Length: 158
Image (cartoon, rainbow, N blue to C red; front, side, top):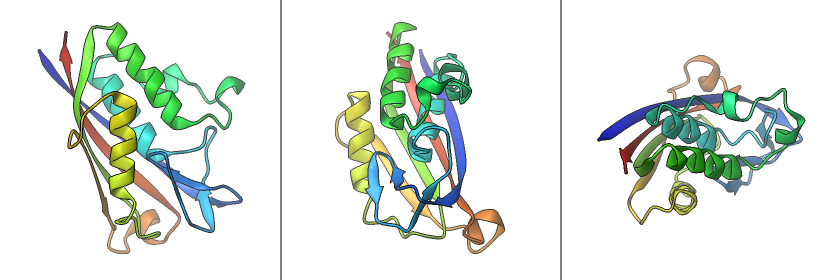
């Protein structure tokens, strides 16, 4: 049986933190606010694979009320979530993600993000796709206040 999950995450920009997306450090004057490293790409994909396996969500597995996850590497959280999915008898087959941000421009970084995500999930080349889009100046994203990520993942029962 193949199942599909959708993940979404958004974070505000903040001064004094690095911008990390999909495990790639992006040269930028500001990062994302959050309890962990606030890697919205990893967070959205984590929710997508957990949802596909019926295994809850990132907030349930790694609550922001738990000091263990303060400044945690979100790529490690993704790997832990994938372990949870595998323990439930599922394997991730592929993932597709869209980052929505006015700034910074991300086209030069999406391949690195896709490679990092695929490696963490044990997937081969071409199994993870990452795209970047703008919000055409609309809303909180258009005003440069933050960014959002949408992820879709498919898992297969083993």
